Image 1 (cartoon, rainbow, N blue to C red):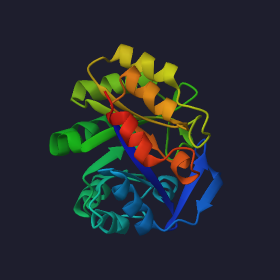
Image 2: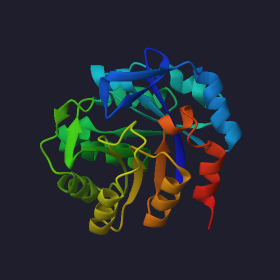
Image 3: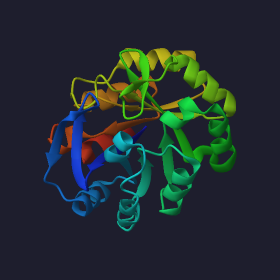
Image 4: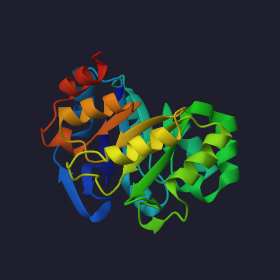
Length: 239
């Protein structure tokens, strides 16, 4: 299993939300470059970059940070506000190694197919779930489709790795929604899922690995010290 340390950006600052609510935003004093370097020094190969401002406003706002983070030696997985072909192309041109797309894949099934044809596995569908329902547009709107139906539709196109966020757990440090992930993996045994939302302990990392998750995103737990990234990477890599 791969552990992805996350960096959520809003107005150039590192922040975290609670349950996807922009009004419940915590700003951390950590500097972007120093934080990214600490992820690399801990042994991470990736950084999971979340453009929260882009997600809220509907267009990317932190593309310039991709190059800065690439300079540290990290691979960049970027998402937030990528809702047009032009913005998606711009994010790759800025240096992103992989993009995760949510709203646009829900709303435009034809674009979902084109993006897979053009970029293949460099695009990951982001399925954001709040209490069993898909949410889009910065978690402010209902997606109008069940998670299983959306994943089946995208799986039929060819997508095999998904970022699935339990928005109701995000930033809460109450543990991941294991039941939800188990249900999805049982329904789709041939896909990989990167879990996000609620991880707060090494036990959570261990449990998700045992459950068969392909990856896990760590956010608030790293910034508030409940998990050391070195320990999480070691746990995820252990036999």
